[in-house]
Image 1: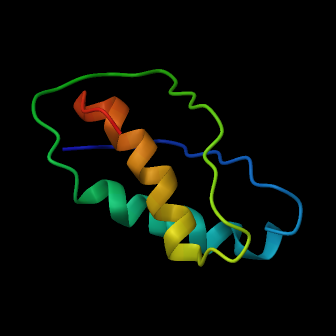
Image 2 (image 1 turned 135 degrees about the horizontal axis):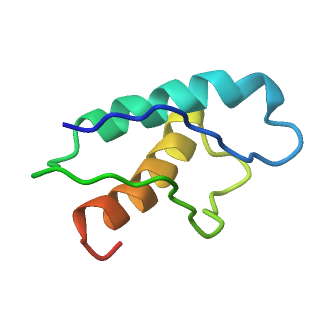
Length: 77
């Protein structure tokens, strides 16, 4: 089970109106990860995740969740 107490995303200018939806979609994507065992992370910082300028909210969230999931599951992106 994955529990996130706080999720803070740094999005580029122009994404302010999309931030809440993207955060929800990231959480939805992370909920489907095959996390096994227990672990506690105080913080998880990722390098910049790049997406195309016309990426949908779901595509942006998928890229972010994919980067987070790779770290959490130990898989290579």
